[in-house]
Image 1: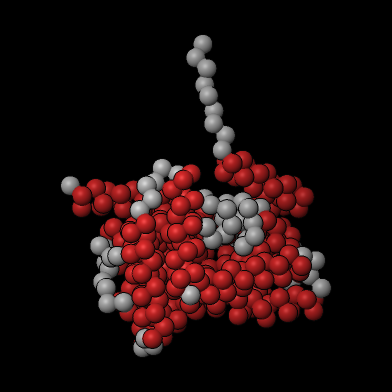
Image 2 (image 1 turned 90 degrees about the horizontal axis):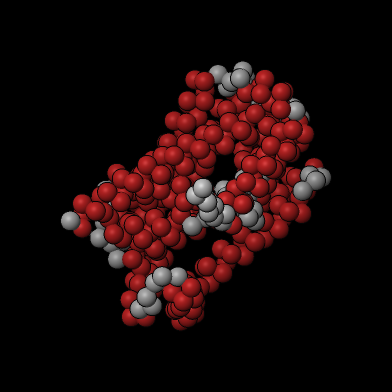
Length: 337
């Protein structure tokens, strides 16, 4: 008899825990009621939601292209689209709702488009700062509303907001202080190389930091129409993402105000910031269901929409992202041959 050795990783345990948490929530609400609501969903609206999800990825790709253009570089929209999908895939399998996909996107952008690593990373940082600034601004009003309404988990949401704000402030402070940025990156690089299979190259790291810093400084001094377009696209992709969630309500059909959907959408994203499970699985879903319930939406409907949203926003992008990663690797193999 041949023995089989099964390796259980921390990630797989977290994923199993996430699935069990979602099942527990469904059991509490009533699996039959949720199932009955789910099968009543109009597939045309679900397909429309999937189309909107793809449009979000296209908008992110176009915005990224504008940011790259500001630095005087060019990148193929096809490659950027594939990289955005790959980034979503990595984000979806790492803890929190926004994981390590950005670093991978920047690394593969530099390889696919022959853009210096420091410059490539600066474009991703600008993206993240834009998204976070807009997100923090709108969620501040949402938190104020939930404080007044006496929402049960408001302490957790406030803590998430403070954590995200503090993290963004630290990143901006590092960017503004070149010497501190070099020290921080050097220490992190030494730690990664020590415990990973990488060779520490100080000259290469310092060169990348210099490129990154100069690129960020260039962004700061350049305010033209491309920056304005990038900001507008940042707002538009959020709006499309909210519309996608609203469309899923229409699929059931259940009439709910777009303001309620937008509020719950922002709260759910915020709740996923401190989550240790992949893509905020379990915790974010619980918050979404509870938040919709605060707007007098039946728990079975709230749970059904949450599950549909997971299918559209998690399963579909994860599958497309995995396929995109295969295409990217093939493209790199062709370039290296």
